[in-house]
Length: 285
Image 1 (cartoon, rainbow, N blue to C red):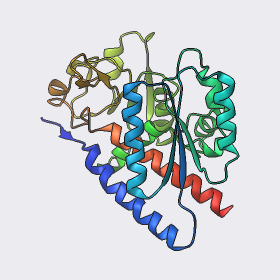
Image 2: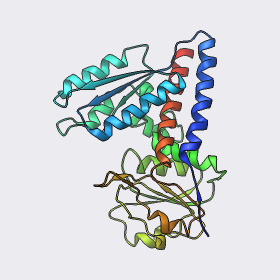
Image 3: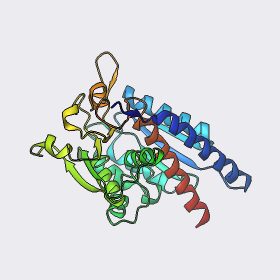
Image 4: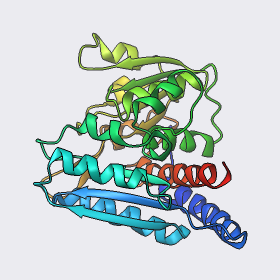
């Protein structure tokens, strides 16, 4: 068996075209364009690349984007004040603060400052809580992107066994909630999990979101499983690596995502969808 590759880049291109068409219809009705504000703190090269990609996506679909690049020395209060200004700006539908933030900034407090109705990243405790209560509003972008990938290949998750490796607030935990909402029986594996290989081998769907290159070997994978690699690490040669031992695992799995070109483009699609959702709510309330 050789796994079929889930091409997130191609799927994202198709979905961006659909969003662009909806924005054209939106504009023809006399409504203002959806608007997103992105705050970039400091000069982290990877963050700058991500922000440029998000800006290109916005330009392609017709969103208005406002990137605010702040000094790495910005104070906690000044950053919180900047977010409050955006909360009150009626032309801004979504607010995104690019991470990582400098060490002197309390990231949790920053997320808490964002108006939940503009939390298009889906990181706010209010939106995570709604997902846990089976009343999703703005869903965390990477887990939402994974669910879009599963839908694109015709997978019906209900009744399947799923395993999520990694329990971060932004990916692992909401990923488990998404799969639970979809009807899976979910195992959450983390650094304290004992005999992780035995647990992962039971899963029909495996999502790894750790950021440790080569973490997942083929021995962990049930034959015919769907393997979604969220982990992404930049090596010393500037090459990107996933959590999964791709070449070996693809000989066991039925479906697998590459790194890059798998989950990453779908995360950005989820951000666009969330922003459009926020704009729709703000302009129809």
